[in-house]
Image 1 (cartoon, rainbow, N blue to C red):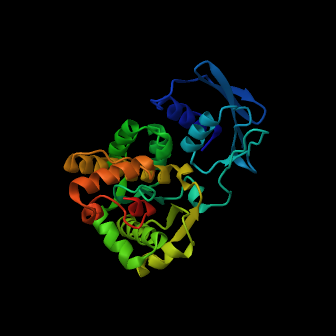
Image 2 (tube, one colour):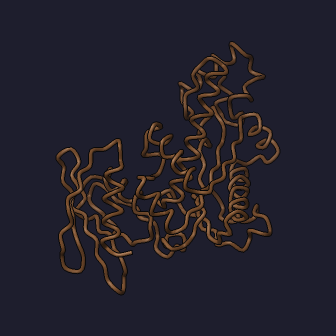
Length: 312
């Protein structure tokens, strides 16, 4: 990949962000690289891309003053280029550590993420996506980013596109299955590890991938210990904010889309709304459910080990 390739990837990715109105100016040559302006609602930020034999491609966002724009660019640029860390008196931007095999764009990768673990109502969904170099670039051009920075409408659209171009696997623990599994295992991290491992196992079998990346949610040995013997040879990397990698971001989109759709089915089935998260609104919705259906049926809609259950 050259500095010009990265410019084109960032430009296409920014212009495909439907919830923003980005303008991307043509690039200008500078010493050892190129620079270009990104304009959002009249606010201009300068992005620089350097290229050298020693360091390869380096993305410099030190002139970008808006954290939201930085987050969008970081999510588009999950191709293994290095970043200059940006610090100021008001903000500190955390950048993934260097040296991860999963950050190399040429490395075929399985990305895994989940949705629903912090929500009292609704299922737990674990999703995995496989992408090689070509597919990673396609995902970037689609505007794939961490689902937490996207609207549900954008997530639904991207999920359909991802399913068309990528091999994927989803595992959905509806509430009854979730509660049975949690009762047997007794630990959320172990349950997550088992789900992640199953998704990785199936994608390794389908694709022959030898590298996988997951968000870090507990002891790094947990997922590895749950893998089948036929998958234990893979390089399994785990780190906080793994969703900054475009393949994990794609998995986060599939997981979130499935979670949102399952929540919609629950609301239609039981004739009431189920707030996301675990808040006072959640408690009120739980009390309403108990009044109508009885506390013994909470296992159909909620995660019973949450403290929320004691308040209903």
